[in-house]
Image 1: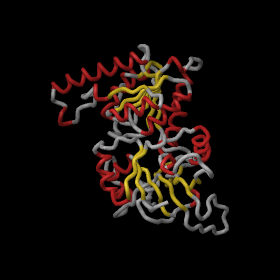
Image 2: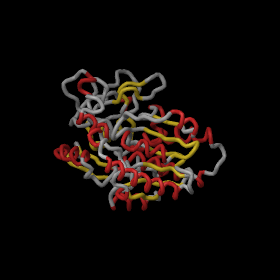
Image 3: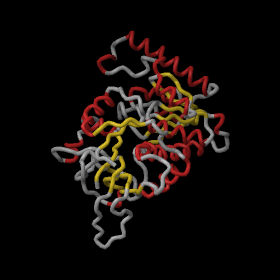
Image 4: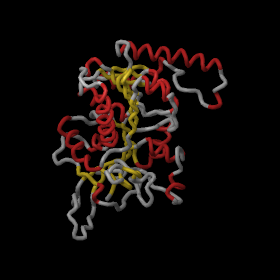
Length: 348
């Protein structure tokens, strides 16, 4: 197959920084070709007498399953921590045809819109687990009286659109005028992250800075007042937190009783801690998911096509193949306005 468009993901940034793991060392390989989400063209199929789901010439989505567990969830990610897998930053490569899901025939959406699918598939799985857990404790209340909040990001954006479809009030942070306007246009209440400049937990070298802690208390207080206002004083019933350590204590402080904090990523830190007693007394449920279940993939794709739950037209940004180092640097330094950065490997 040959890749057409690849999606730049947080796991690629993690791989380049070799944190939280060094994927080369983890795989026992000297080098790794990254890129596990994107649109590819099938060039040749070796069937070996098998009935495979793709044909030569098909345009397909790569499912990032390197190693699966007995329930078909991802245990190791393709082109990340799974040894022997080659990602979409290769001009051409071979892979198991059973990891390819065809783009719908006659689709109403562009290949660039489909290339963002990884954020949507991940959001689908995480949202349904989080919502199901919330309903185990809040069985009958109308979601219209409840707030779902998310820290900024493409997965959180997709997840909040599902929450809004379910009837919830939804809000999300963003740090630029462009992103705030984008959220508003898509029915999500935008919260300007710049109003709370010291919201993140100080790093180890800053822990002794008393003035920074004072400023942080001011930012946290202001943010929690916004959440209280949006939730009529109850807090967020479901909080989508894919950031991690720097904001985790704020997430928990913003959570309602019987609330759910849900996670499918750790962009800024994997290690978190909380007071188990406080979480138990508040009946908080913690949901952690990773990727999605492979057999669910066709159903998610078909929902996206039928319902238009897909990246809005023109919301992506595309870098050419020789600009990938620039893309990596821009992503790492927060210079990309879009939630959906892509890279073009081969022409359509």
